Image (cartoon, rainbow over all chains, first blue to last red; front, side, top):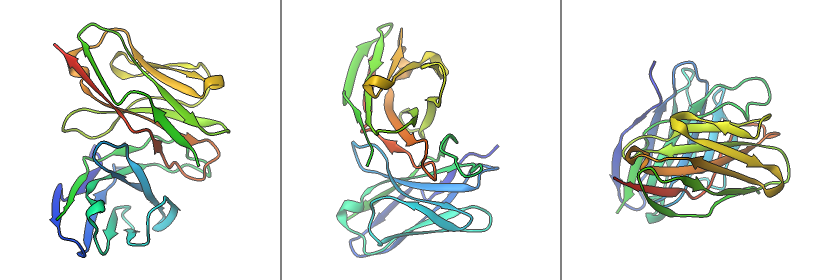
Length: 117
Length: 115
């Protein structure tokens, strides 16, 4: 049973560039969430996708955008990269059930380490 | 907006010692509570969760946590740690009436167990 897979594992970019990170959810999951984990901090919620639409969003600027595909995989795009965007980007998947899925545990991938020079 | 506080950033202890990590949250309504662990070089894994019922919940690897509603706390405990418990531990909450399952994490506690 495949867990959550993310690619690439590491990425180095320069300020002003754009980046795309990818995530394949755990088999059977239909909801994908993205988190940013800066060094020494806990993960912070960026947004969540379900049925190919952004359903929830955290306190991140519009430079952060995403997409979910019909096969439930997802991409995170960041434009106009800043030094402060250097972080570990985590993807988590879960199964949405009914209208209240707050009790559905999320399964995390290994993350993509993004470094901005 | 809800927030989660973990009192200790770093904990160092010897094998067989007891471990207790504090977690407090600020949210007036009912919440689901989680502890995640991140072993060196590995992804975040769910240790245990509390949704309702018995406030003392048991998780994997001998960990347990106690939900004290009056104190808005969900402290993690293990009676006797092993070297393999060296990891970073994160407390997280989801408001039970939330439309989705967005996790709000604490800042994490790094635990180093000396052999």
